[in-house]
Length: 239
Image (cartoon, rainbow, N blue to C red; front, side, top):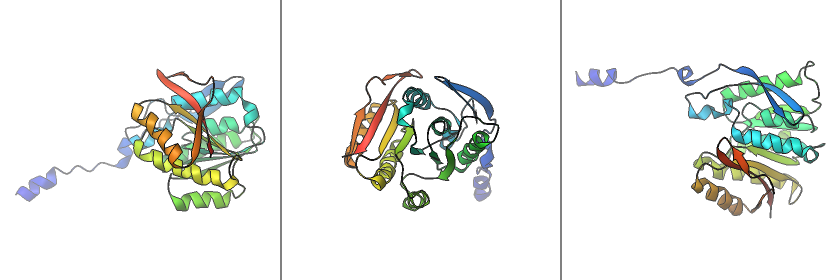
């Protein structure tokens, strides 16, 4: 009898219960550039599906890049934690190659849909090669696969509002270090749009950059309020 009662307490829920796929085509403006893409207007229940939204740090990053488009001209770029792809797609207006990455299969679906939207003949002003790759930070096999597939390396690594889980930060910097090493010291930089949500995270990202032999510099004039929080742009290079 007790065994039957225990079994009655077990609740099985379909994983789709936690998902929100109500994507809406939304227009964003950065300087003179407009981008349309599919994204959610509110988050899914599953914490792992945060990439379905456009985060405040992505707006910070895109405003910065739209004002400093010369940094992107002719570059090959990889974005970490691309989500719906708003930053990588803006970069594609200026770069010759953009590789957008994420680790979550559901997020990759909407990312690829947005890439298709901007790679179509109806989409004007994009001349860059756009590609989506699965990349889980710290996963050596996946990092190697991406590096082998794009063996020329990258001029820039981008990350917009991707530091919100403390456990993932060491893996993020491990991944960035591998990617920076392809080109060597001074030939590639990691641009991070960071939004401060906890002092412990503020300290952690500085400590991890140092531990991985990186120099982390705040870009002058980029500290601002985004979504009622402090945001800033960092440039990170190998020492």
